[in-house]
Image (cartoon, rainbow, N blue to C red; front, side, top):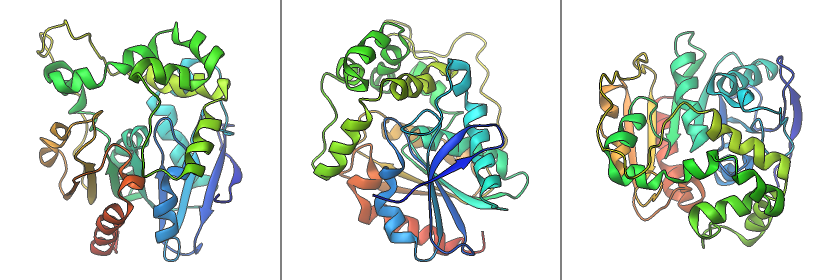
Length: 302
């Protein structure tokens, strides 16, 4: 297991953080998704830590990191703020942001916010929808809306009783009909993940990310159309070099999420990885790392 240190942010939040690699090397901050941890980046950190400073927190609400009570503590602005405060605490003037799933959703926000000051120089997003495009897909695309119905279960207060009885696994079982399994996950990693899901306090905090999100997921009986008077979420164009890595067999996030990205990002590279599911960083680490290597080399001055 990768060694962690406890880092206290200026807002009082404490995060358990992997911080490895040369201190004077370019910094990469890795953000995990749900229901995950810093360990999801094990293949990338092992591959890159010889030439980059690799930083991977267990984010707010996860594992041993701070778990403030109340959904209001898991709004995107606070989660994005944690990333910049972590960079402050570690003395980073600038960094590359890399995120997957919910961590990728934050990475979009970190990139758009941090590009203005020059603090965030590059972004890598893996299987995480863009905040402008995703809400529209949820309204108009039947495949995406069907795949996102689990949001409604995670947001249902009745799910808390399942957590109290069975841990996070109880809610995952209700949402997906089975606990996630994948032949590419090492047995020791699966055992560690299942152990993490037993933490009831962390499970409620993790669900808080879904409950605090402004994204709407309607039922399948609602019309597949944008609401009357719909206005696209206004965000600045993304100007920093951006790599989007997409596993093409992701059942939660179909490839339709890639449509329109080129209209929102100036310097966009898309790496499509066939034969891999949602957790592409460890399901297809060789292909993932190859795409990452090529991007980091091309943008080495960033």
